[in-house]
Image: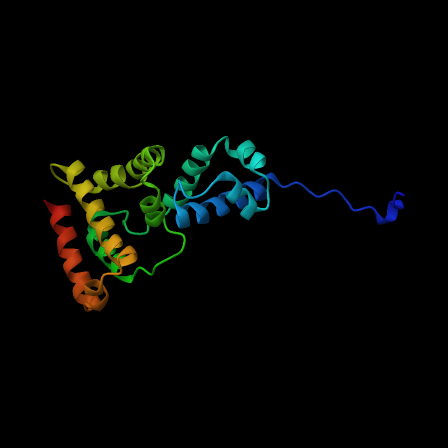
Amino acid sequence: MSRPRSEEVPPRRRDAAATREAILRSALVAFTSHGYDGVGVRDIAGAAGVTAMLVNRYFGSKEQLFAEVVEVAFAQRTLIADDVESLSRFAAHSLVAAEPRSVDGFLLMLRSVANPRATAILRTAIEAHFHRPLQALLPGADAHERAALFLSVLSGVRLMQQVLDSPALATVDPDLLEQRLRALFDLLVTS
């Protein structure tokens, strides 16, 4: 028996942008929490309230979805200033003031690098979002290498803070830690 017209449920309104955004948010949380190899398209789709087929329709593949998630995660350079004068101070202050977050580009990278395809995507994104802009800021010779060292120090400190929960970094006076980090970054900026 069919319902009378007044009781029919109206068709659900499709919103491609909202669906795409829901999938990206779900994937960002999933990849950050479990890494590239630790989550499947079905898991991401379920958390977004869509089917795996729809995820593939929007993004083509898990690899392409991961690449877009990396772009979203790396879009904001929260540890690198846009000018050389404040670069060391900004990086040191940001590292000391950083609060652990559940969705974080560093954790996304750390938990996904075991997969060679994910590593290639991450390497390309780090080069575009961090290394080249940082290299362009640095004056003098060997800017390419100094930019890589600058990023290595940032990553190492984040690893010690967020993953290993280093007691030494947690108990040192924040002002002293910031001062020492700034001096270290200054060496890389001005050399």
